[in-house]
Length: 379
Image (cartoon, rainbow, N blue to C red):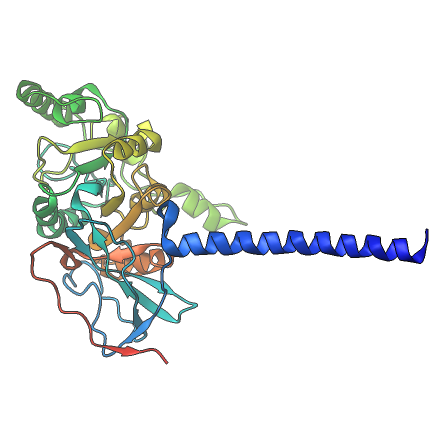
């Protein structure tokens, strides 16, 4: 092959490569331009962080239940969720190690595209008949005293919050363990059934009879423990664990009882109960059918069911804009008389990948808004 023909071929090849490269660049520019213009439901978010001067503690409205969050490095970011015809204002925050602090942002939601969900409002030790077994049984927050404290939190924080939003949001839901048994089927609305007044009355009578007829007595803690010479610590905890909620201490059949929604919640006929055993997909399908885009999540316990059960944020955050209402939840608190430190720790950890809000930061259109923090530009 002559040198001239080889040169021509090289030029043609280079021209072809150049045209391919140019086409790719133009394609990227078109994609970038459409993204900036918000086509296909997208928009460009300006992640501009503005330093907040003299920030006040977060989650400081209910210090009996949660230790306030104190972080000196706080930033204001632009509005994240910005619905058209928004009528629900939700200020929220998250923590970023990379940003070296807490990032706060306003959000403008449509209330009718928002669901309020309460995880595991168990009706235990509240007078309905489902009681913590004695002398050593465990349920919910595991002791009668701790359950009563959680009940106080429900009455003072969560119930007023639900009552304020119920008439404005798409739906209010509660999740409970187990399956949709015949008694709770009569008591509560579910995805496919709305009980009549007569059914609810019958269900309430059956619930009372069922719960009050159970023997809430299990075994006592062991009086003696058989220990081996080499592994006494292993043997000790194997025979005397820190939490055993099985038939040994709770009695056989305790967890087969129909767990009701706590009396500390004023349940409305339109409120819906979710049953954990049905799984996440029916919940997701129902919320999508209601055109829900946002979820305000409350309930118990922050370190367990609140994150990992059917209606927990690990599931919901895959499909919805989830806001954890940080002062409308409690963590379990072993070895402590208060849940405030445990709740702070678990909410703070969740803030690495989830948005946290609080009751006073959730305002319907027209209500008095909290004054924003003074700001200074990040340098």
